[in-house]
Image (cartoon, rainbow, N blue to C red; front, side, top):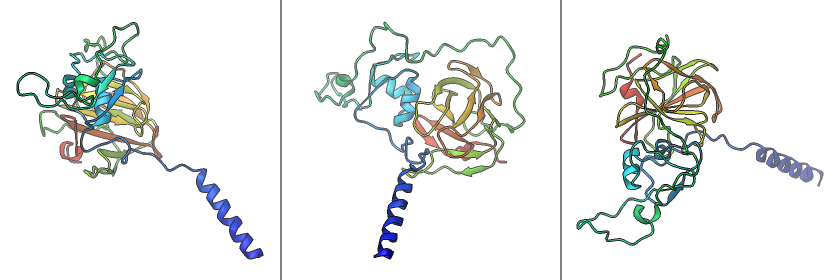
Length: 268
């Protein structure tokens, strides 16, 4: 009986200990998606941009804007509902569906703003001061594709891209706290925040209509939404927000779809 009681106590203590430690939630399978979500709606919260919402649900921001009749510069407001449903195809100009899952019926127009936009992106302005010199961690740019890419940090690649549903949709680069994170190409900041689960402090840059890049887990973010940045300019300091180790999670997306950054970055 004493042996049985001892074993029972051990099992109970082990169970309690396991319950005290939640599993590490990282980018694996939490937010990234290989295909876009095409059902339901998203209610805009403060700090979000159309770019971050499109990123969350695997959409190309231009398609999401068209589906919800949101014109450039894509200003959205807290409480506005963004439809994630695809419109039914129309051959005669009139809608053939009355389902509440279509973007026409579920998406409400932006409310007349008695409040401030969720996040206002101002047009890029001429810099009053010269852009910081490129960091020594940034290597020469790659000429693959329409954007000239360079490494966003100087550490080693510790995790690679995966096309699996629960795989990493970018690469993880090791480093120390406050190691510089630099823009991988010329662009403009279209999101700065921590609203995407698993990404921690996140920056999203727009490089062209088709190309975006993301920089996650930052300790400090040194640019704000709307800022124009140059390739190699420091935009953040590396950290461990939203993850279990100091690292930079770096993604490139083309037309809303994640692509392998190692295909585009210059060889080390």
